[in-house]
Image (cartoon, rainbow, N blue to C red; front, top):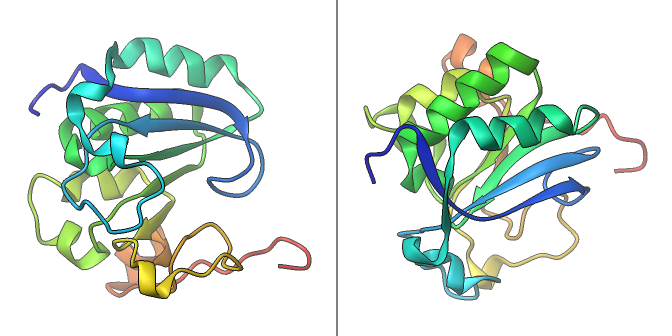
Length: 172
């Protein structure tokens, strides 16, 4: 998908607590190429199952939920990389909100792929890696399987290596 002003969105959930710390506005992308065995939402794999939404309309939802930070999930947001990069850039420029992104791609793959890499400059945290059913662990914080990493994106970019996110939340 090459749109930069529209996204195929399954849904937008405001004030969720499951896609990162604190209240978040989660934008669930339609479309995923990974097709992970055991995926909790295989309907999200199909791009046409979403509704096309203007980026500026999504931005208004984010702005109107002024207490919530933002998460991109799906499907896989990086299956619509240009449009999600545009959205992330606008969110950062216009609100400064914290952005988490869930993807089946690894940080390393994103870094070496010209169409994926630009989004990294607008993300705070990346939860990377495919869901692997054999590594499923319901006790993990903000991820589904133990192979997935929670990465501090800006620190990782500055240091040239993956820096894992460490929860500052009490009792976690």
